[in-house]
Amino acid sequence: MSLRIAFFGTPEFAATTLAALIASDHEIVCVYTRKPKPAGRGKSLQKTPVHQMAEAFGIEVRTPETLRDKGVQTEFAALKLDLAIVVAYGLILPAAILSAPAKGCFNLHGSALPRWRGAAPIQRAIMAGDRQTAVQVMQMDEGLDTGDVLLSETIKISDTDTAGSLHDVMMSVGADLMVRAVSVLERDALLPVAQNQNGITYAEKIDKAEARINWNVPGPELDCHIRGLAPFPGAWFEIPTPKGPLRVKALLSEFVQLRGKPGEILDEQLTIAAGSGAVRLLKVQPAGSKPQGGSDLVRRFHLQLGDQVL
Image 1 (cartoon, rainbow, N blue to C red):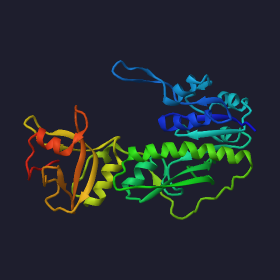
Image 2 (cartoon, one colour):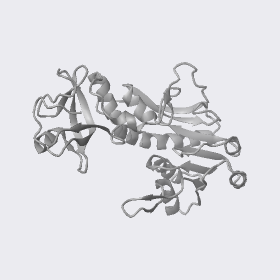
Image 3 (cartoon, helix red, strand yellow):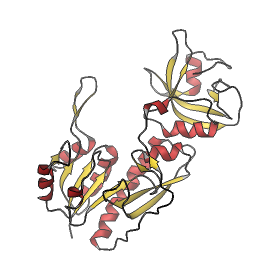
Image 4 (spheres, rainbow, N blue to C red):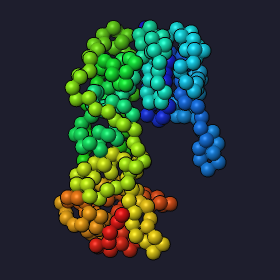
C-alpha cells in the first residue's frame, strides 16, 4: 500500500532521506522547507538542498515562514496525508500539524534518546566524549524530542571522528532507517518504545563563544571539543606572526601524552600542551587559507618549539 507523505526538511542531511523516500513506493505529495536565502559572493538567493531535490523530481514545494498560521494549517490538512516525515526542518510543528496526518509525524533524530535531545546532538555527543550514539526514528509529540522511539540504529564514535564524519555516517544510516520505518508502518508492525525518564540531557545550540580553544582544559577533553566542532563552526586559536595574531581553525586532533605549559608548541607536528597532556593538531585552517596539516602550518609560519599560541 502506497502512503501519502509530506516531507519537512532543509539541509543535505534531510535531502538524503528525501531521496531515499522518493525512490520507495510511496507518494511524496508535498515538501516543506525554509525559504531561499542570499548566499555566496553575489548574495543570490540559494534554495535549500531539500528544495532543490524536490524540484528535480517535480514535487510541490512550500516555504512558509511559520506553521502556526491558520491558512497554512488548513492547506496542510487538505493534503489528506497518511504520514508526515521531519528531518532537520528548523521550525516547530504545532499540534494542528502534528495531528493532521492519519498516522502522525515521524522525526529522524541523531542521538540515543533521551540523551542529547535538542539542536546539536551530533556535536554534543563527540564534545562530551561519548563512545557511541544512535540514529532513531521517533513518533513526534509536542515536546522537545520526547516522543516514543520506533526504530533505532547504534553508531560507534571513534577517536578520529569529527562532527562532520559522524554527520555523514548518520545521514546515510538515517535515510535507510526512515525507509525501513515506513515499510514496517505499512505492515502495522511498529512497536513504539517510551523514552527512559533517566539520563535526559539536552544538546544546546552551539554558541560562538564555545569555539575559542581554552588551552587550560585537560587534553582528552580538548581533543573531543575540537573534533566535536569540526568542521563547523570550527574550534580556533591564534598563532603569533610578524603582522600580529592570526586566527587558525583546528579541524582534526588527537590526544598525546606530552607535557608543557598550556598553549606551548611542543614539536614540529604542531602538538600543543593542554591543561594535562597535549593535543596534536593534524589538520588546521589559517584564516584566508585552505585546510592543511599541522606540520605545514609550523613550516609556513616558522613556528618554533616553545612558542605560545593564544
